[in-house]
Image (cartoon, rainbow, N blue to C red; front, side, top):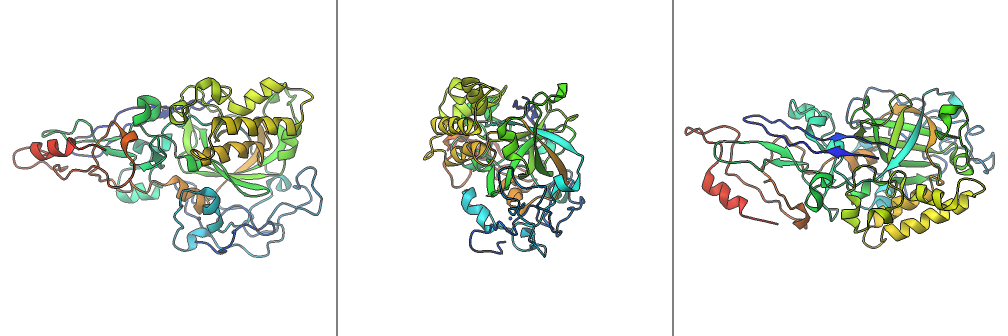
Length: 446
């Protein structure tokens, strides 16, 4: 995956933002227990709010029984159908009551969210086809830039789902935008918090709890960089078909045991990035997964203190490295999985980076170490879990008094450095800011 270019944003007397271009290549709990049932758990919250423009898309089969005979995972019993097959009534959507705010621990968060029913796309004959590549470069997500969502009014901004959360190098959420660095007496403006892939340690990073999370044996949630013809905040239901994009162009896909093991499993993914080199023609979704490869941009080395060489292959990450080391023929799925697990332990310290460690190992466990697998898909409403992991909890209004900082790596939590020395409306002297008070506020530091 390749990622975001930073563009500064300024506005005089009005809000305007110029953001990043992204290029990606190669939930109110109904069950206070685990919230996951192999009998009734399925995919889409039937009335969940969808940031972006997919809220009008109906959820096919949201309460229908799912035939299990053609969607069982290879190697499993025919009596073990896709979860959801025994559901006789729709599961209450997580948006039907007060949203559950995530704690930052996905494995605990996911237990608080109900999961509604979903469609067996393989059995229904869905013809939309696509495939996954993978990446994790740690850059500021494309959808964290305000010019990539509708900021024409506060209502429009809310309807668009706000911006994606971003975090500092210590994985603490920070604003997605602030007052401009050039703020002074006769000039007022705002700009996005710069990306770590442009300015290094002091910039904004992907929040690590956006790593994929397993819901049950056949369902996971995650985030993707979608093609440029898809928008921020849309969600998609993917069901893997047991094949791969590798070799597909020649009509001879290189199907391995890993792809067959993934067949029938489901993912709901939400677009948090736009990949301008992601292939819209083949519906490529670049999956945000730790250890997936950094591509052109690399803030991950800065964040975790590992050299690029220690992160696996530049394109494809730990799995591609394992495939290169073990070979491509007569290698078992278990060998690939073991290698990936070992690499994940090596790259991501489980104490310091638990979400990155867990998300990386997910590639070996739930995802079966499948390289560039193919799927059938449909656009769906977003589960509240993904909405809550996506949405900034700080930059939710089109007004801010947070001062620009070049060193967000110094921020360790608590109050932000703000100023009330400025106004978007000039005073009688033609000034936006009181220079003395502004200078005093700017002298503060994290």
